View (cartoon, rainbow, N blue to C red):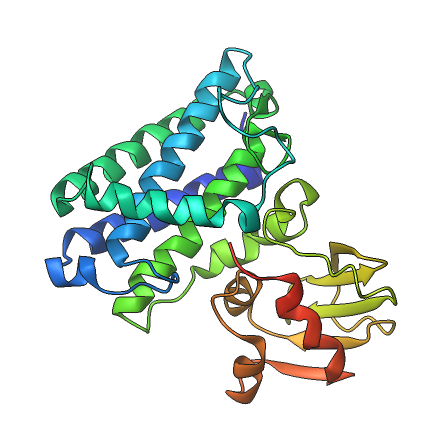
Length: 286
């Protein structure tokens, strides 16, 4: 029997995916060519990146089921790669796909739709034991359950990257934003998008207050960075960031700037505001 949270994540991914594909199907060629919220990517490049990424996830899970959690030939070992050292290759690959293999919007949409369907079907067919099998990801050693968390992140953020660029009323799905807390607090996953500052030796602690739900605590000390669950407003925090979970997902992935969000009244800070100056040193994007 699938664990309740796993089932909720699967349902959330399917709902976002269905909506995203429906919106993609109505895009004009001009829309596909329009700049996305991802630096240097058009909307079509985001979609082609989703094709490549979800194909990778499907391959990792398929290999995991037969007992192969090792890196494919030519791939980096788990724990040796992150967004910083792979960003250039990922970016150029997405553009290459959208300009060559999938340069027709219908072919691109068809490939994405097919992969989404096959990946979700494969995930939903996993037994409880298979969720815990080792699966390959360059960021770290993960399980198939970890790949599901990655899928939630990629689906939520890249749907926003493409669709918000065309309609600024489009927001990160709120259910997904709350579920993404497990991504932010997972050392196996968050090393992909965090950059500990080796120059900050003195401890810095930021609480993230999500209001009615449990927040987060971001702790930097001696060149290390840790993100854990915590009720907002802990008294030992240097500062408290009060923010909506959806907006926070854009802040931690560097889609939105913290200082700008503060000036716009979307985020409030209590305590020592200067302690937040390191936020975008730690979180530079994914």
